[in-house]
Image (cartoon, rainbow, N blue to C red; front, side):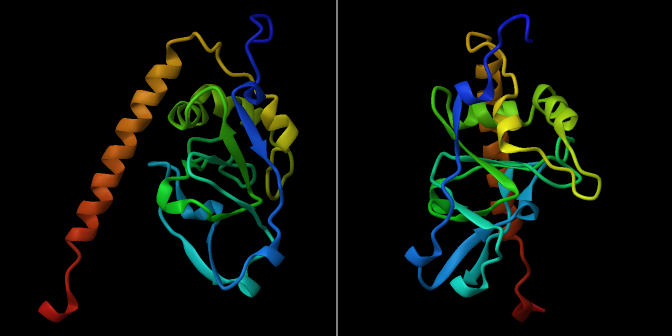
Length: 187
């Protein structure tokens, strides 16, 4: 990839690193940690509602619709269980953990970026960059220096198509699962 002058991740998205200012918030806040993202579906499957005073110290960034989060720390980082997800409209303004890199696509869309973050191409590079024994992690700067395929490569369109399909199927599955919950009064 170095020989072919493939662009860096920083060429296709920005790293949002403006830390959360708790003094500008009040009341209950929605918070997402790495464990709240299902790595199989790339969906946020749990949202913690916490009072401002109960937010963990790792509650670091406010995510906006279209942003993409990807794990930077933990045993699954750089493996097929690596957690990444798109921030959807209903999650706009949610607070995310410092265990994530918060990425804002610039010249590609969120689906293309998530497709890349789920690819073996990305995961191999991340796995190679991990440091630390107890809790492996990747630095923000190293993440942004990861190589991406050339932007004219048709893989970007394929990734977007496949992620949109995954997203639709996951949403439908979650709706179906919610619809068949058994009402305790009928028992």
